[in-house]
Length: 185
Image 1 (tube, rainbow, N blue to C red):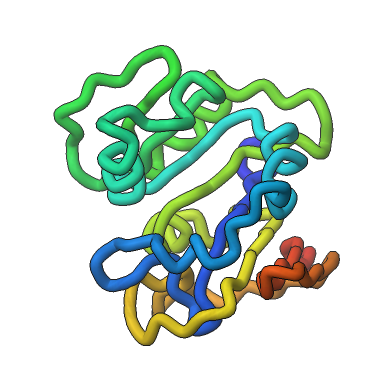
Image 2 (cartoon, rainbow, N blue to C red; image 1 turned 90 degrees about the vertical axis):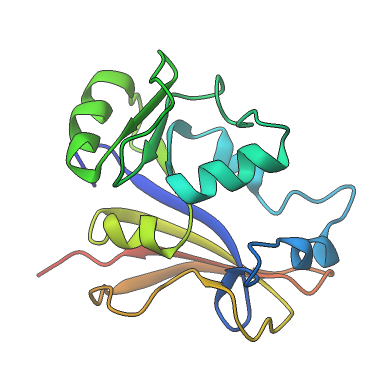
């Protein structure tokens, strides 16, 4: 939790822990696509009040979508970056560092319920920067081994105790696990 706001992850990875292949490719996700299955995305998205994404993921996803970031305008978006951006911040899109995030949350995110969440997305570096602040994790495991790529959890992140709050299997072979951060004693 950061500034009284729940932070949550909704991500997919290969069995060996990669969220993209070594060329930033996401083609492996297609093997579980089903016309009538969203794997809980809409239920999760209905609770989202803001979106935090790593700069690299922002650039890759924007490139895949013709230069337009698909979540801009749905929720206030914060792009985590360590280097200055050549893009100007707007009312719905802000660029900044982890140190800027608490102020952005206070000024841009309105939480009405304890179920409301800010979606934290991106590669392991973005999630590592938020280590210790993530409250809930929804991780979908795709039944494939990539062998290499962009890890969801890079080496060197601090340990964090989690407790399971559920798991589901789907006909596509996808296994979805849900965790919440275990309260510190």
